[in-house]
Image (cartoon, rainbow over all chains, first blue to last red; front, side, top):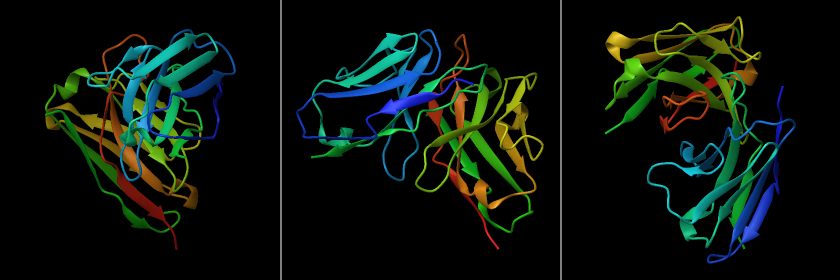
Length: 107
Length: 121
């Protein structure tokens, strides 16, 4: 079973700053990694799939990179609406497991 | 507008049963595989079950295998999750989500707002 580990657990930044979130897989997932954003009381929203492809309607300030076991979600300049919890998810024979999440909070 | 709307959640006693439904609209439901994903209070996301477009392939998380049954009715544009032998640890918000036609199948591009299941005596 592939385990995803996200870091840091909490990231405190100010609007306008750059955010870098990490997701590490216990074994290679090739480029089959997705990122989701979840705000309190809302469903998750797909941001990135296949490590670096932005989903429809996602602003260009969100970008993803990586392959194999190490992946990064970057938000180039934080907007107030970006403060949320972010999850990575990998593909594993349909049993797509999630990381534990990174909470991005306002400093 | 592409939309998924879950229903059927509620309060149930341990050992009880519940059937969740997910109504799809705005897209050709019969062409897409679907997932159920849950989130316990204050916790992260947990994949629960998947079903392919024609119900040929069905998968379950180990935590629910033998207790939950996923199904769909393409004529009714609906997805279901029959939950039996419910436990306190099944308490969560349950989301249905669409799996786009991508190879491999894994990420979810459309999510419902969720329905809350509480298992308590």
